[in-house]
Image (cartoon, rainbow, N blue to C red; front, side, top):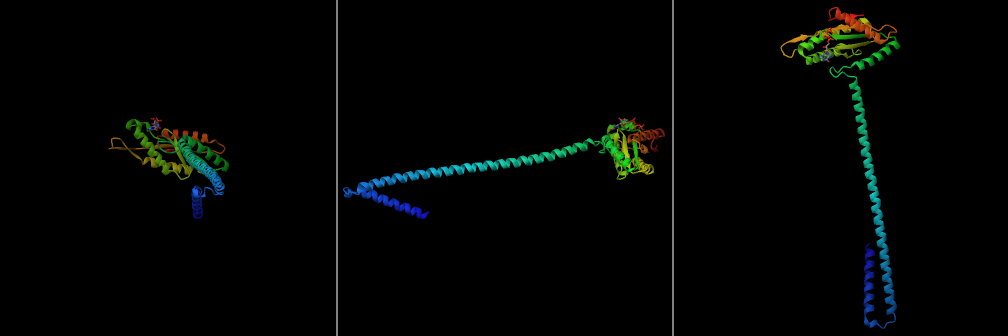
Length: 269
Ligand SMILES: Nc1nc2c(ncn2[C@@H]2O[C@H](COP(=O)(O)OP(=O)(O)OP(=O)(O)O)[C@@H](O)[C@H]2O)c(=O)[nH]1
C-alpha cells in the first residue's frame, strides 16, 4: 500500500516536471516538445479511463456486497421468523394437549365431590366387567344412598346439603380399598366397584364405609348444632355370564330393600 502511494507521488512529480518543461518558452523550439505534449495528453486520457473503470468496478463490488448482505439478512430474518413460528406452534400444541386432557378429565369428574361421575363409572363398570369375564374373577357392586337427604336440604339449605355430599365423598375415598372404585352415581347416590372381590369382603368394606359416614357430623348454619349422617347400601356380586348392568339393577334393588328395612344398613342380594 505504501509502495503504491510512493509510486503515485513519484508519478505526480514527474508529470508536474513535464508540464513545467513543456510550458518553459526556452524549449518552445525543441522538436521533441510537440510529440512529448501529445504523449502526455494521451497518457492522461488513458489514466482517466482506467480510473473510471476502477470506480465502476468498485461500485459494482460494493453493490453486489450490499445485495448479498441484504439477502443474508433476509434469510436470517426468515429463519428467525420460522423459529418463532415453530415455538408458537409447539406451545400451541402443548396447550391444546393440556386443554384436551383437562376437558377429558372434567368430562369424567363430578365437580361437587371431585369423584368420578356417572360417565366415568359406566366406563369403569364396562372395563371391570370385561376383565372379570375374561379372567373369571369375581366382581361386586354396591350402591350407596344418603338417608333422608331431602330433609337436610329442607332443614339447613342446599349449601349444607352440598357440604354433606362432599363429606360423604371424602369418607368414601378413605374407607374403600386401594383397588376399589367409587364415583357419584347421581344426586345423593354413590356407586362402588369391588374388582376381584367376593361378596363377603365387599360387605365388609361396605360396612366400614357406612361406619365412616355415621361418624360424620355436619355443622348447621346457625353454628351451634351439628347433625349426623347415615347411609344405606345395596350390594351384589356379578353372576357368571351376567351382564354387569343386571348386577347394578340388583344392587339398586338391594338398596331399596335397605331403605324399606329402616335405612342405615347394608343389604346383600
Ligand atoms: N344439596 C344438594 N342436594 C341434592 C343434590 N342432588 C340431589 N339432591 C337432593 O337430594 C334429595 C334426594 O331426596 P329423595 O330422593 O327424596 O331421598 P331422601 O330424602 O334421601 O330419602 P331416602 O333416600 O328415602 O332416605 C332431593 O331433594 C334432591 O334435590 C346436590 O347436588 N346437592
